[in-house]
Image (cartoon, rainbow over all chains, first blue to last red):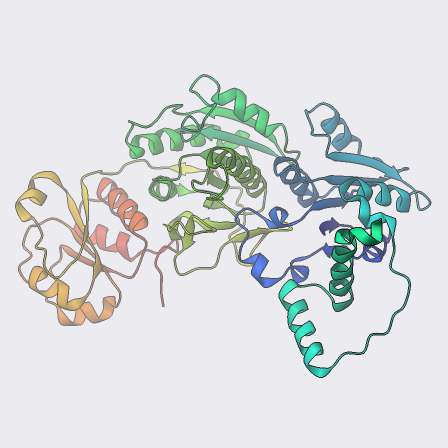
Amino acid sequence: MTILLLNDSKVDITGVLQQRNIRIWSSINDVPTAVVGHSTLSMLERVDAVILELSEVSPNAQYILAQAIILQKPTLCLYPKQKPPRDLLNHLVHRNIPKMITTRAYTTVTVQDILANFLESLQPSICQEIPNIKFTLRLTPSLERYLQWLTDQKQINKAEFIRDLLKKQLESDQEYKG
Amino acid sequence: MKILVLYVNGMVQLPGFSVDNVEAKLKEYLELQFTAETTITLIQPDASTVPYDKIVTQLAQCIAEQSADYDGFVVIQAIEQVEYSATLLSYCFTSLGKPIVFTGAGKEYFANESPELYEEVGLRTNLMTAIQIATLNCRGVFLAYGSNIIRAERAVHFPSEMQWFMSGGEEFIAQVQFGIELQPGVAPRLTHSLQLDTRYSTEVLLWQATPHQLLPVHTIMQQYQAVIIYGASLPVLQPQLYEYSMGLPLIVVADDPANVMQDLNISEDVYIVPPITPACILAKTMVGLGRYTTSDQLRAWFTNDDHQEYILV
């Protein structure tokens, strides 16, 4: 899953998303070259969801929010509880905004739960388990080269690729589930 | 920021749209954007039979009349002839200190999906992009169809899998990525008033040069005030230009203008210009004929590169 994140605040949203192995695009440097050249309208076409931190409502944030609504991308607009963007919130309240666009006031205590709930709504399996068990896997040189090539093609890291393989095996293993 | 949105045509061809509901639909779309206060004006709700130059004159006059009240302008027009409209509009302003952004639906977007759905999605996203650009610190006439934003003077309609226009000999002035940022060097806004001159002639022939076609001299003399030869090279030009004696301005777009001028006995009616887009040389010629009467005046006009329209290698 790929999320477009605009966050100029000190709140560590990136860390929360990375714990869940979510790919984050915050600038053009994060986007694979092949994707940059194949976006007709904007990068938003290629993401699964959008998270906007709105301590300061920049013109670019407003623009991305409008595009997210049009392209029907699930979007979480976060703002500090003590500093709501009143003009923007009033604007959203009075428009026929799709339900996939959500706005939440956060504190440093509540932000992780808010993010977890949003991610859960996108793909429940993302939030259920965090990989925290270390496992050493020794490979032959040829297998390592093949794994490197595979992960370069898919633009994910090796651990994520192997976890995905196991997840697919798990999902199809009726004997194990039984 | 206050932006004037001028609708010309293009939407009524989309399913669910008609002349009667265009304005309401536009209002609905514009409610989504939070960047600017917008006003809608319908120029020609169903402009399919109106010559594009007449539409451009209306646009220019409408923009000039209201230029003091708005910070930027967005023009919604169907994609087929937009580079011709946009370049002619650019030349109609002898002084333009604000941005005018052309936009609309791009056809054949997401060819594998429902085209009707994605033409509307493309229209709405392009409209948001155009509004955003119209608020930025830039001046000139631009095209915003897709994620590459182009100056009108360099736009070439070249539909590909991903984009609808190329920029001839110049980088895009902005690209839509994480928001929109102008490239360094884009001309900033100016505070002086907008000045308009809508004099032009439509009696111009744009002729694609080939080795085996002769200029239809008799037809040209009857119907046109000038001829543009496009795609010229020396071997193609020579047989025709040595015989040239029509007395009409002949504008030759040459890859290597200096080389052409050395090798040909150029009459005062022949104007050799560097590479330029077809839409731009057509607009430049139309406006030149409308404003100037002598060959010296025309020569100064074709030498002038104030619009940075020539693609200089």
